Amino acid sequence: MTPAPLSKMRCARHAEREAAACCAACGIAFCRECVSEHEGRLLCAACLEKTVSGAKAGDAARPRGWLPAALKRAPVIAAGAAWLWLCFYLAGLLIEKIPQSAHEGTVWKQAVEDSDANASEWEDAE
Image (tube, rainbow, N blue to C red; front, side, top):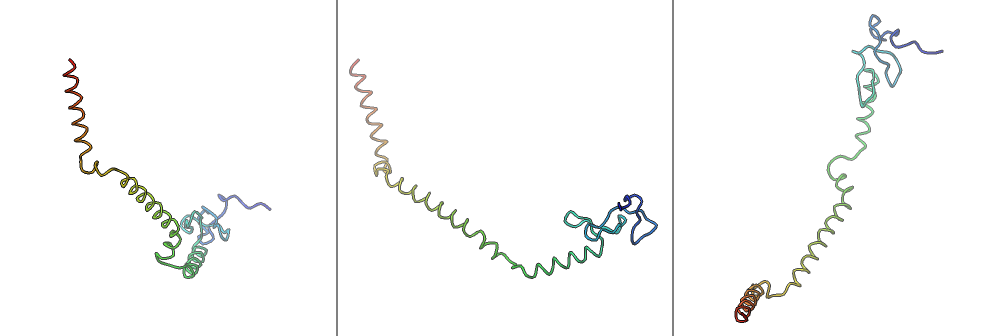
């Protein structure tokens, strides 16, 4: 037996109204006023109450607060911190390899003196 088309059905609560949708949980036809959308499904008031009260009971069993979420992300945070430490450690080793004369500015003075000496040699050669 095939069900009647929705346009021929009537609301279970308001017999004078045409049915707009069937409840996804119980399958009874209702008008637009009697159904509500919850999490992408159209539900009647009774089924909506059951769904919401069941969800509240399930919420009580779940741990709340920021600590459980932080514990889930702890390995990722630790890996990120280790990577950051490694990058800074290697940067420090590179900085240590720079000769002391570069820090004091004597390398640049030497380069200027060398260029001046080369310029004077070129002038003497002419």
